[in-house]
Image (cartoon, rainbow, N blue to C red; front, side, top):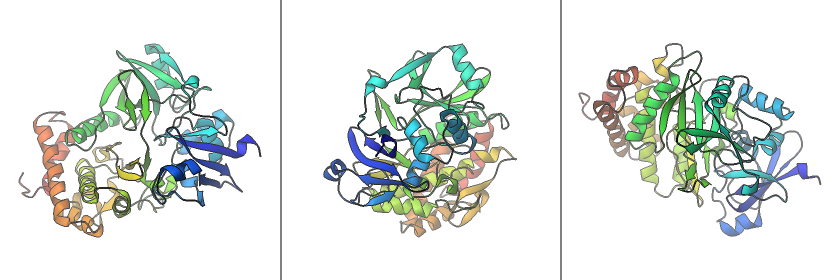
Length: 412
């Protein structure tokens, strides 16, 4: 059988599985003896939808979730001269640095830093790449072996220190995501940066985010939460997956109701935490805070690919919040939630009682979830009071209006 029929899936230094292309566009995965010797049967090693076992599993949703969507996927496919529907071919070409800690390598190949490379980018080079993201998504070149899910104009970079940036080559792990401002909805990345600042202050995320001016564009530069950079510059990958992958659903089904629906609901996410997390009550309280923060800032794009899990040693925890875009600040963007909260679709109808109803559907203590919602709202208001974001800006004004609905005392 030719090399192109199989790929080895590595998780860190363990060859955990092999994938092969079957009839049509099917991709089948089988775990290795090394994986079976390392972890316990039915643990979520690669994915909550691919529990460890001895059988053959359908890997299409997992791999689909590692690749870009829409025109970005088509552009990467054109560059590699691969049909856009050929997920196996795409992950073979771009699977050395993807979301999480997995790498897809040819049979007989092993993870090695020998292939790693960097292309340091001067100001002019970086500006040219940022300016060209529409025609060259992710700033891919022939030596690039990386993939990033999503639709936005963005690229993966490596921080070199002293404000210098490089493009990763040969599967070298990237450390940051650079997002260029939306050409139609100006100010989107600035609003996202402010929302991430509030989220970090509230303990809902852990990574740094800031705005840089590049080639006349506002660009959001975000640390990758699935990478740890040591003092010597070595990068460790941390495994994660988004909610669509965890539920075995294709990326196109990322919305609960919109665009055909069928996407994850908060109760689905709670079910994964209930089955696979160590401290279920704590994780569900945190999920209640995520739902609260989403409603407070008005993020109608908090769909199943914008909520993720960390997978460590066969257990699951919520990943830090990311892609926190307050879409309601743009009248032409959707204002209805990507996931209903307590049966409510419009953010103006979401309050502490809605959070408590939602938690009840998870079989979680509604009072505990309500207290978590209040804590989240109070932290957001306190951050604005301390001026960690512009206290007179659109986001702060919006949060001061919405957050009191989640407080025990609505006058707070």
